[in-house]
Length: 183
Image 1 (tube, rainbow, N blue to C red):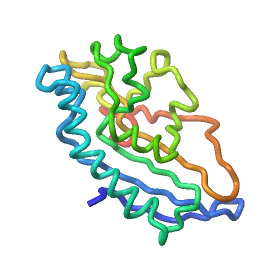
Image 2: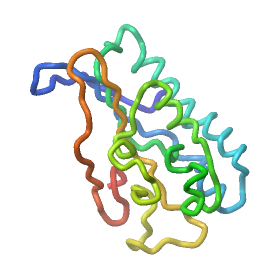
Image 3: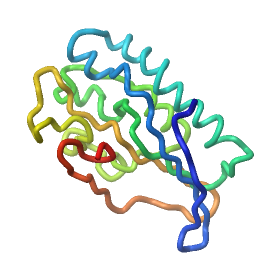
Image 4: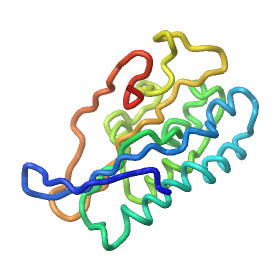
């Protein structure tokens, strides 16, 4: 029910970390519903709470923060969240978001659980570094009317006991038709 799997890995330093990959449910897709006028901000937040954020909550409870699963280790959660980041949809970024500000619950939940969005840590301003992972259009760079370009694929980390990690570089795999993990 969590839409994820994980492993414990040994880093070159000998320290251990946990790595979870998830692919959360794709529908309903809030940005598209907002832009096409099918749902209000309040409704897409409620939709996200009942779908993607629900899956993320189960992932956190059953695997990530469960005391029997080495919750004190540095942890990575990566994958296709199918939900944007609240860090990208603030009041200061209305122009890129069709005039909407949305506190997306899935990303907020991760940040409130102590996780850091790697891309936003390295590139804190969503106006200068949007970070598209979906949709960049198909054929490449042809975006239809009423379609949002989004960052819905993420790398999050939370330091645990032991060595503290921090990101130093970020790459966006730019494939056609989809960047990031969509290819």
